[in-house]
Length: 314
Image (cartoon, rainbow, N blue to C red; front, side, top):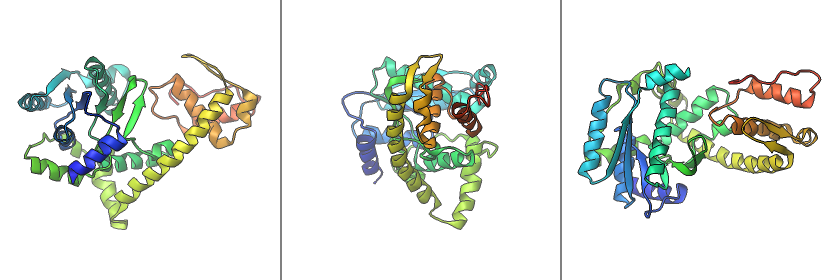
Protein backbone atom coordinates (compact mmCIF):
# COMPACT_ATOMS: atom_id res chain seq x y z
CA UNK A 1 0.00 0.00 0.00
CA UNK A 2 2.85 2.40 0.81
CA UNK A 3 4.41 2.02 -2.64
CA UNK A 4 1.01 2.50 -4.31
CA UNK A 5 0.47 5.74 -2.39
CA UNK A 6 4.02 6.92 -3.09
CA UNK A 7 3.76 6.12 -6.79
CA UNK A 8 0.59 8.20 -7.08
CA UNK A 9 1.92 11.25 -5.24
CA UNK A 10 5.36 11.10 -6.89
CA UNK A 11 3.89 11.10 -10.40
CA UNK A 12 0.53 12.89 -10.09
CA UNK A 13 1.26 15.45 -7.37
CA UNK A 14 5.03 15.97 -7.56
CA UNK A 15 5.27 15.37 -11.34
CA UNK A 16 8.49 13.37 -11.08
CA UNK A 17 9.83 11.42 -14.05
CA UNK A 18 12.32 8.51 -14.25
CA UNK A 19 14.57 10.11 -16.86
CA UNK A 20 16.44 12.62 -14.67
CA UNK A 21 17.95 12.30 -11.18
CA UNK A 22 16.14 13.40 -8.04
CA UNK A 23 18.26 14.75 -5.20
CA UNK A 24 16.92 13.44 -1.87
CA UNK A 25 17.76 15.04 1.46
CA UNK A 26 18.29 12.08 3.79
CA UNK A 27 18.66 12.64 7.53
CA UNK A 28 18.70 8.94 8.44
CA UNK A 29 15.29 9.04 10.12
CA UNK A 30 12.35 6.82 9.09
CA UNK A 31 10.72 9.39 6.79
CA UNK A 32 13.71 10.14 4.59
CA UNK A 33 14.74 6.46 4.51
CA UNK A 34 11.23 5.43 3.44
CA UNK A 35 11.40 8.04 0.70
CA UNK A 36 14.79 6.73 -0.42
CA UNK A 37 13.79 3.05 -0.49
CA UNK A 38 10.36 3.79 -1.93
CA UNK A 39 11.53 5.93 -4.85
CA UNK A 40 14.34 3.47 -5.55
CA UNK A 41 11.83 0.60 -5.66
CA UNK A 42 9.70 2.59 -8.11
CA UNK A 43 12.63 2.96 -10.50
CA UNK A 44 13.56 6.62 -10.04
CA UNK A 45 17.16 7.80 -10.45
CA UNK A 46 18.43 9.09 -7.12
CA UNK A 47 21.26 11.12 -5.64
CA UNK A 48 21.50 11.10 -1.83
CA UNK A 49 22.55 14.24 0.04
CA UNK A 50 23.11 14.67 3.77
CA UNK A 51 23.97 17.79 5.74
CA UNK A 52 25.54 17.31 9.15
CA UNK A 53 24.33 20.24 11.26
CA UNK A 54 26.96 19.64 13.93
CA UNK A 55 24.37 20.01 16.70
CA UNK A 56 24.76 16.55 18.26
CA UNK A 57 27.78 14.45 19.19
CA UNK A 58 26.38 11.54 17.15
CA UNK A 59 25.71 13.60 14.02
CA UNK A 60 28.88 12.34 12.33
CA UNK A 61 27.74 8.77 12.93
CA UNK A 62 24.44 9.58 11.19
CA UNK A 63 26.34 10.82 8.14
CA UNK A 64 28.54 7.68 8.12
CA UNK A 65 25.43 5.48 8.35
CA UNK A 66 23.78 7.14 5.34
CA UNK A 67 26.99 7.11 3.31
CA UNK A 68 27.45 3.38 3.89
CA UNK A 69 23.79 2.75 3.02
CA UNK A 70 24.03 4.75 -0.21
CA UNK A 71 27.23 3.04 -1.33
CA UNK A 72 25.84 -0.41 -0.53
CA UNK A 73 23.01 0.32 -2.96
CA UNK A 74 25.20 1.86 -5.63
CA UNK A 75 23.74 5.34 -5.16
CA UNK A 76 25.63 8.61 -5.45
CA UNK A 77 26.16 10.28 -2.10
CA UNK A 78 27.06 13.86 -1.12
CA UNK A 79 27.76 15.00 2.45
CA UNK A 80 28.79 18.22 4.10
CA UNK A 81 29.15 19.49 7.67
CA UNK A 82 28.19 23.02 8.71
CA UNK A 83 28.16 24.37 12.27
CA UNK A 84 24.54 25.53 12.41
CA UNK A 85 24.93 26.88 15.94
CA UNK A 86 27.63 29.26 14.73
CA UNK A 87 25.49 30.28 11.73
CA UNK A 88 22.49 30.97 13.99
CA UNK A 89 24.57 33.18 16.27
CA UNK A 90 26.13 35.06 13.38
CA UNK A 91 22.81 35.65 11.58
CA UNK A 92 20.76 36.32 14.72
CA UNK A 93 18.43 33.40 13.98
CA UNK A 94 16.95 30.60 16.03
CA UNK A 95 18.62 27.20 15.68
CA UNK A 96 15.55 25.85 13.83
CA UNK A 97 15.50 28.72 11.33
CA UNK A 98 19.24 28.63 10.71
CA UNK A 99 19.16 24.85 10.23
CA UNK A 100 16.36 25.19 7.68
CA UNK A 101 18.14 27.85 5.63
CA UNK A 102 21.52 26.09 5.72
CA UNK A 103 20.01 22.72 4.79
CA UNK A 104 17.99 23.93 1.83
CA UNK A 105 20.80 26.10 0.53
CA UNK A 106 23.04 23.01 0.58
CA UNK A 107 20.41 20.76 -1.07
CA UNK A 108 19.70 23.15 -3.94
CA UNK A 109 23.39 23.81 -4.53
CA UNK A 110 23.93 20.07 -4.93
CA UNK A 111 20.79 19.71 -7.05
CA UNK A 112 22.15 22.24 -9.53
CA UNK A 113 25.50 20.46 -9.58
CA UNK A 114 23.96 17.10 -10.57
CA UNK A 115 21.27 18.59 -12.86
CA UNK A 116 18.49 17.19 -10.69
CA UNK A 117 14.88 17.58 -11.74
CA UNK A 118 13.85 18.25 -8.12
CA UNK A 119 14.90 18.25 -4.49
CA UNK A 120 12.83 15.71 -2.52
CA UNK A 121 12.35 15.75 1.25
CA UNK A 122 10.49 13.45 3.63
CA UNK A 123 7.67 15.63 5.01
CA UNK A 124 4.63 13.45 5.67
CA UNK A 125 0.93 13.88 6.45
CA UNK A 126 1.59 14.16 10.20
CA UNK A 127 4.11 16.94 9.49
CA UNK A 128 1.44 18.69 7.45
CA UNK A 129 -1.01 18.64 10.37
CA UNK A 130 1.65 19.97 12.72
CA UNK A 131 2.54 22.76 10.28
CA UNK A 132 -1.10 23.83 9.93
CA UNK A 133 -1.51 23.89 13.71
CA UNK A 134 1.68 25.92 14.12
CA UNK A 135 0.41 28.50 11.66
CA UNK A 136 -3.04 28.56 13.24
CA UNK A 137 -1.62 29.24 16.69
CA UNK A 138 0.58 32.01 15.30
CA UNK A 139 -2.42 33.71 13.70
CA UNK A 140 -1.48 32.95 10.11
CA UNK A 141 -3.44 34.16 7.09
CA UNK A 142 -5.00 31.72 4.62
CA UNK A 143 -1.73 30.71 2.86
CA UNK A 144 -0.33 29.45 6.18
CA UNK A 145 -3.41 27.33 6.84
CA UNK A 146 -2.93 25.50 3.56
CA UNK A 147 0.27 24.00 4.95
CA UNK A 148 2.98 22.64 2.68
CA UNK A 149 2.62 21.78 -1.00
CA UNK A 150 3.53 18.55 -2.79
CA UNK A 151 5.50 20.62 -5.29
CA UNK A 152 6.68 24.18 -4.73
CA UNK A 153 9.27 26.71 -5.87
CA UNK A 154 11.43 28.87 -3.60
CA UNK A 155 13.29 31.54 -5.62
CA UNK A 156 15.48 32.30 -2.60
CA UNK A 157 17.15 28.91 -3.22
CA UNK A 158 16.42 28.24 -6.90
CA UNK A 159 13.94 29.60 -9.42
CA UNK A 160 13.81 26.52 -11.66
CA UNK A 161 14.26 23.46 -9.45
CA UNK A 162 11.18 22.56 -7.38
CA UNK A 163 11.04 21.22 -3.85
CA UNK A 164 8.84 18.12 -3.77
CA UNK A 165 7.30 16.21 -0.86
CA UNK A 166 6.14 12.79 -2.14
CA UNK A 167 5.23 11.57 1.38
CA UNK A 168 2.95 14.51 2.17
CA UNK A 169 -0.21 12.44 1.76
CA UNK A 170 1.11 9.44 3.71
CA UNK A 171 0.74 9.08 7.49
CA UNK A 172 3.68 8.35 9.75
CA UNK A 173 2.27 4.99 10.87
CA UNK A 174 2.26 3.76 7.25
CA UNK A 175 5.82 4.96 6.81
CA UNK A 176 6.95 3.18 9.98
CA UNK A 177 5.29 -0.03 8.79
CA UNK A 178 7.12 0.18 5.46
CA UNK A 179 10.48 0.79 7.14
CA UNK A 180 9.90 -2.25 9.36
CA UNK A 181 9.05 -4.33 6.30
CA UNK A 182 12.20 -3.20 4.50
CA UNK A 183 14.21 -4.18 7.56
CA UNK A 184 16.36 -1.06 7.92
CA UNK A 185 16.98 0.52 11.31
CA UNK A 186 16.70 4.31 11.08
CA UNK A 187 18.79 6.70 13.09
CA UNK A 188 16.84 8.25 15.97
CA UNK A 189 17.32 11.92 16.81
CA UNK A 190 16.63 12.28 20.55
CA UNK A 191 15.94 16.00 20.13
CA UNK A 192 12.69 15.05 18.37
CA UNK A 193 11.22 14.36 21.81
CA UNK A 194 12.38 17.62 23.35
CA UNK A 195 9.12 19.51 23.97
CA UNK A 196 10.92 22.81 24.44
CA UNK A 197 10.78 22.95 20.62
CA UNK A 198 7.42 24.24 19.39
CA UNK A 199 6.79 21.50 16.81
CA UNK A 200 7.70 18.74 19.26
CA UNK A 201 5.30 20.13 21.86
CA UNK A 202 2.51 20.10 19.29
CA UNK A 203 3.34 16.53 18.31
CA UNK A 204 3.69 15.03 21.77
CA UNK A 205 1.38 17.20 23.89
CA UNK A 206 -1.22 19.21 21.98
CA UNK A 207 -2.25 16.75 19.25
CA UNK A 208 -2.79 13.83 21.67
CA UNK A 209 -4.95 16.15 23.78
CA UNK A 210 -6.97 17.26 20.74
CA UNK A 211 -7.51 13.59 19.85
CA UNK A 212 -9.42 13.23 23.11
CA UNK A 213 -11.96 15.71 21.70
CA UNK A 214 -11.92 14.24 18.20
CA UNK A 215 -10.00 11.01 17.48
CA UNK A 216 -9.97 11.97 13.78
CA UNK A 217 -8.55 15.44 14.35
CA UNK A 218 -5.47 14.81 12.20
CA UNK A 219 -7.60 13.70 9.25
CA UNK A 220 -9.87 16.71 9.75
CA UNK A 221 -6.96 19.15 9.74
CA UNK A 222 -5.34 17.50 6.73
CA UNK A 223 -8.59 17.68 4.73
CA UNK A 224 -9.12 21.28 5.81
CA UNK A 225 -5.67 22.27 4.53
CA UNK A 226 -6.38 20.49 1.24
CA UNK A 227 -9.68 22.36 0.75
CA UNK A 228 -8.15 25.70 1.71
CA UNK A 229 -5.33 25.09 -0.76
CA UNK A 230 -7.83 25.16 -3.64
CA UNK A 231 -9.44 28.34 -2.34
CA UNK A 232 -6.04 29.93 -1.83
CA UNK A 233 -5.05 29.06 -5.43
CA UNK A 234 -8.23 30.77 -6.65
CA UNK A 235 -7.39 33.90 -4.65
CA UNK A 236 -3.79 33.76 -5.87
CA UNK A 237 -5.06 33.98 -9.46
CA UNK A 238 -7.20 37.00 -8.58
CA UNK A 239 -4.25 38.59 -6.78
CA UNK A 240 -1.96 38.08 -9.77
CA UNK A 241 -4.50 39.76 -12.06
CA UNK A 242 -4.76 42.66 -9.61
CA UNK A 243 -0.96 42.83 -9.41
CA UNK A 244 -0.66 43.04 -13.18
CA UNK A 245 -3.17 45.90 -13.12
CA UNK A 246 -1.72 47.78 -10.13
CA UNK A 247 2.03 47.36 -10.40
CA UNK A 248 3.87 50.31 -11.95
CA UNK A 249 7.45 49.19 -11.38
CA UNK A 250 9.43 46.78 -9.23
CA UNK A 251 13.08 46.02 -8.60
CA UNK A 252 15.10 44.59 -5.74
CA UNK A 253 14.78 47.79 -3.72
CA UNK A 254 11.26 49.05 -4.39
CA UNK A 255 7.75 48.15 -5.52
CA UNK A 256 5.51 50.94 -6.85
CA UNK A 257 1.75 50.43 -7.19
CA UNK A 258 -0.94 52.66 -8.69
CA UNK A 259 -2.57 54.18 -5.62
CA UNK A 260 -5.95 54.70 -7.30
CA UNK A 261 -6.09 51.18 -8.72
CA UNK A 262 -4.90 49.62 -5.47
CA UNK A 263 -7.67 51.36 -3.53
CA UNK A 264 -10.39 49.99 -5.83
CA UNK A 265 -9.45 46.42 -4.88
CA UNK A 266 -11.38 44.53 -2.17
CA UNK A 267 -9.58 44.66 1.16
CA UNK A 268 -8.84 40.92 1.01
CA UNK A 269 -6.96 41.43 -2.27
CA UNK A 270 -5.24 44.57 -0.92
CA UNK A 271 -3.80 42.52 1.93
CA UNK A 272 -2.59 39.86 -0.49
CA UNK A 273 -1.05 42.50 -2.76
CA UNK A 274 0.95 43.87 0.17
CA UNK A 275 2.11 40.38 1.11
CA UNK A 276 3.08 39.74 -2.51
CA UNK A 277 5.04 42.99 -2.64
CA UNK A 278 6.88 42.10 0.57
CA UNK A 279 7.69 38.62 -0.77
CA UNK A 280 9.29 40.16 -3.85
CA UNK A 281 11.41 42.50 -1.73
CA UNK A 282 12.17 40.02 1.06
CA UNK A 283 11.91 36.46 -0.30
CA UNK A 284 13.67 35.21 2.84
CA UNK A 285 10.87 36.50 5.10
CA UNK A 286 8.55 33.57 5.85
CA UNK A 287 5.59 35.60 7.09
CA UNK A 288 4.44 39.17 7.62
CA UNK A 289 2.62 40.06 10.82
CA UNK A 290 -1.03 41.16 10.84
CA UNK A 291 -0.18 44.54 12.41
CA UNK A 292 2.36 45.31 9.70
CA UNK A 293 -0.17 44.57 6.97
CA UNK A 294 -2.85 46.69 8.66
CA UNK A 295 -0.48 49.66 9.07
CA UNK A 296 0.31 49.43 5.38
CA UNK A 297 -3.40 49.37 4.53
CA UNK A 298 -4.07 52.39 6.77
CA UNK A 299 -1.33 54.33 5.04
CA UNK A 300 -2.50 53.31 1.54
CA UNK A 301 -6.10 54.28 2.22
CA UNK A 302 -5.28 57.55 4.02
CA UNK A 303 -1.63 58.64 3.62
CA UNK A 304 -2.28 61.87 5.54
CA UNK A 305 -2.76 59.98 8.81
CA UNK A 306 0.67 58.39 8.97
CA UNK A 307 4.01 58.38 7.21
CA UNK A 308 5.20 55.29 9.03
CA UNK A 309 5.61 52.06 7.10
CA UNK A 310 6.32 48.67 8.73
CA UNK A 311 9.87 48.35 9.90
CA UNK A 312 12.19 45.69 8.51
CA UNK A 313 11.30 42.30 10.01
CA UNK A 314 7.77 43.27 11.20
